[in-house]
Image 1 (cartoon, rainbow, N blue to C red):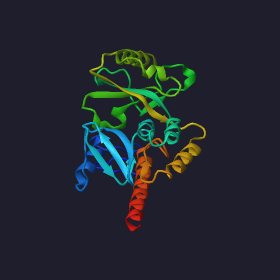
Image 2: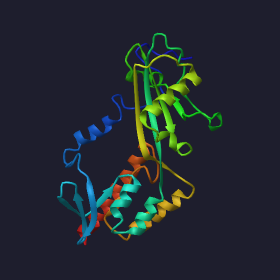
Image 3: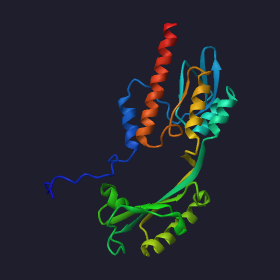
Image 4: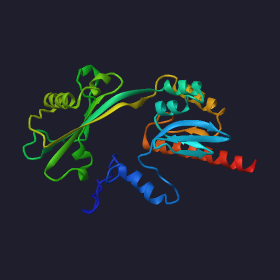
Length: 262
């Protein structure tokens, strides 16, 4: 067995940004100095305008654009395009979303009843439990947890038990603590507990999804200058979304170049 130097850490299968995933967005905003960002601004309506598109914003102003890339969830893109193309909207609305929730819960390390020797566990459906999985955050990403503390993150809801994720936060917190008591013997009081609810936000790729996405792309060819991208189409992971976003950007650039040349 190869011994690593003391200042070197073994390779981990789990990789993330040190300061959280919002670091990715913050860095993009910082580096993209030639782009105008309108934080906190909602697009209320999208319509055809001459040879381009008109976006109506929540402050009553308008943006006229030659091309629009909608990187919202499919149901939001469906709402925006519905007046222009009910058929495209109908296809987009066929992409199913379900509700999920996560619970981050921290304890003092001293006296904690479990060794956390691993990274967590997934619960098979046949066990009849009310959580889907539990990540041992302090083992997986120790730099995210203060010394002398441990943290867990539990997952609730999903396609088969969606109703559990739609309970109120107090009920979800109590439920998760009851499950952790039964599964891991954790009977101590947490020093931190936070419930994060994601109502109808987790996309589900059902049988026939690829054909559905193909139909959406084909229908959008009748509406030049409007493109969709995001987790609803060709992959839910961050690399998948980056790839799909880059493809949408290339298509938009090609469209604009052809429009300029004609």
